[in-house]
Amino acid sequence: MRAMAGVLIGLFLAGLTGASPAAAGDAAGSMTIVGNGPELTVIEKMARAFEKTNPRAYIDVQWDEISKPIELVKSGQAQLAVMGKPDPELKATQVAWDGIAIMVSLSNQTKEITTKQAADIFTGKVKFWSELGGPETRVLILDRPANRNIREAFEQRLGIVGQIPDKSKVIGPDDKAIKTVAGTLAPNSAVTFVSLVPALEAVSSGVPVRLLTIDKVEPEKPPVKDGRYSLRRPVLFLSKKEPNPLVEAFEAFALSKDGQKLLDEIYTPVDPKS
Image (cartoon, rainbow, N blue to C red; front, side):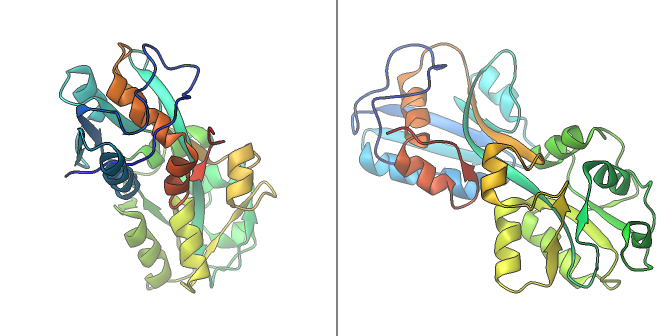
């Protein structure tokens, strides 16, 4: 898939190595971006915009749910991987935050829980919602694929790595997870975790689901950005540590106001550069 995004900036993260990025419109060459998570749509938009502003640049976006993006960068088959955690052998540039919302049916009276209770829910220790002030129905855990960035971050944040019951039903894309919670035959029972922005959009569009407040903090973009809402993961660009002007130019764009505006469609931006 082609894609890339426009308007570069002369400034870039202090952590970047090598030469400064090319001036706006001067980026040239080809680059492959890889990933396996929910970032595909926004990365494609950024790639298209970048190519439009830099006609001598070509960006190929390759996405596969079963791929190993980090290994593709290390082997030289790709130049940039979009991931949720760093790798000691690669350079990491954070471009956004992804909040993680815990979602139940709107008919479930449970409205807020603690981090500890969230961990107990997803490890199977809480078996009935009535234990948390909810309905007299059994908790039905809807898990996410093991190779998804969101699942790994969710487990780590709750301290439950490897503890979600194997028998839990696994749901792939966020939109399918949301529809499953809303349409479960036992509507009071299902619970899952999804990226915050599509979860908020589902609530605002009238989908009968509820996002649980965690430790008295509501799942919203501002508390995700400042860290008050703890269920979040960084959206990272991983690349080799050796200088690559085209990679650096794309990273700089992602951190510009234009790039952050695109990321804001799906994620919580970091502070944009001028």
